[in-house]
Structures are given as C-alpha cells and as structure tokens.
Length: 337
Image (cartoon, rainbow, N blue to C red; front, top):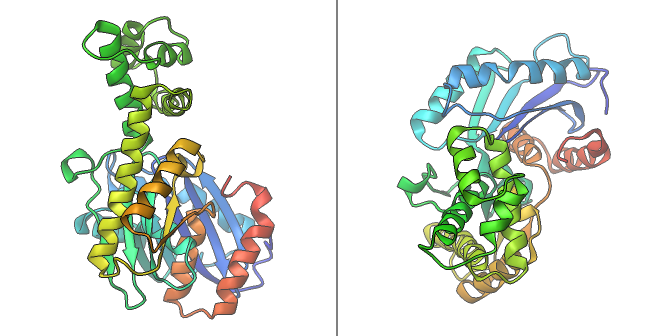
C-alpha cells in the first residue's frame, strides 16, 4: 500500500456497520493510500454526531498511513448501518460534513456498499444478512428499491441478532415443556459454559452474558440444524425464506421480475457458508425467480463505498478496476478479513 501521499486522494470511503467499521482513502488513480478498521457504528444508540465523532480516530489512522498532511480526500462516500430513514441520512450527512474531511459528502445505507461491491454495471439486488437483515436494488438509471429495515415493526425477520433470540425462545420452551424438544436446549447453555437454559436465561437477562457473546449463539443454531434437529432446521428454513422474499420483492419493485439479474448475498450469516442455509436459498430463489443469478460476495463493502465515491467523481472504468486490484494486493493487511 502506498503511503507517500504523492497521488491526489479522491475518496474517503467508509463502511460502518453494527459489528465493525472499515475506512479507506482512495487515490484519484484508484490505488489505496491508507486503511483502518474499528468497532461498531451505532447512531441508533448514541446520536449521529457522537457516532460520527467516533470515526475520527480511524480516519486519522488512515490519513497517517497515507502520508497526507492536507484534506483527507475530495469526497466522502459513507455506507452506514442505521441510515434507514431520510431523517437519519440527513443527520449523518450533516455530522460527516462538519468533520471537514472532504468538500462533498454522500451517505448510503450500508446495503448499497455490498450491492456496489458485487456489481460492475450498477444493476442488481443485494441482500445483507449480518447482525440484521436488509435489501436494496439498483438500476442503471438510478432507480432504487429500499426497505425501512428498522426491525420487527418494519416487517423484518432474521439476521444474527434475531436468530440467537429465536433459538433461545425455542430452547426455553423445550426446557419447561411448552414446546417440542430440541437439542438447542442443551447446546446453547453448554456453549455459554452454563448447565441449563434457566441459567442461560438468567445470565442474558442480567447482562452477565454480553451482547457479543449472545451473538455467538447464532452459529450454534446452524450447527444444531446441520445435525438434523427439526426445530433448528425450521429456523434456518425461515431465514432462507426471508432472504428470498426480500430479493423477490426488490425485483418486483424495480420492474425486473422475470429478467436475468444478479442477486448479491452478503453479511456474516450468508458469507459464513452454512450449507443448509445456502442450499435452501438457492432452491427457493430458483423456484421463485428462475432467471435470478445469486452470488455470495465476500469483497468487503468498503470497496463498494469506494466505488460509489469514484462513480460520483466521474472516475473511469480503468480507475475502478485499479481500485479492485489495489485492494486485492493489500488484503493481507487485514482489511476485509
């Protein structure tokens, strides 16, 4: 990675999610000048101003690595979690502009970072299933399909933050006799180093099991499902159904249902490659939309944020290609792991 600062910095790309944040400074020729990684971005729990202020140390780290002494870049392209409603977009854009990192700022929901990372021609649908679940669609003329994606009240189901709760719900009912038996009843507390569901319920309720530790229960659900447990398997099927429902709804809203169109799948739950989940998504999508072309995208969404920024500044195809190549060369530094 070049840190000389000899090439003009064009874009400060930010991909800030519920679990991690990536920052990249991209030169006008598409090369990476500096990168940094940090923790979660939660303006929904703090405020737009406080959350954006938390990005400053990462931007400074990337600036130092890039060897820059002046403005960080000409344009900020920020793909942000919890940028779901117009009022949230405006608050985050105002907070980013106030940092003075660049002359112009554009804010996207983080789903668009995944979508752009997985596309070369700005036509497709993306479903992200990580801590939460969301979907976005895009056509070359700028037409988009979006979802509110603020949780249960907006019709959402799934993502790692919901799956572990669903697993506990069924395990609790198995333990006290209200529901069918399931291996989850023993597997969940065992993973947490506890003996019974009663102990796990108390630990989660009292906060002695952290949020991060609760999220670690989601892979346990998939492992139990893979061993043939029907309750766990039903949750995996439900997750597949939700992914496909979002993709199909986005295609219909874009007016491309029945046409060939890529469906980009990303986020930790989908990139983990759980065979049962991915096989079910493939089967259901083939039944519902046979012309859709699903693909799992493991390119980190910060690349998509950078590409959106390069689109905005009118970069050439060669520049965008150089960005992908530059990132691939520098991936060993940890960005995108």
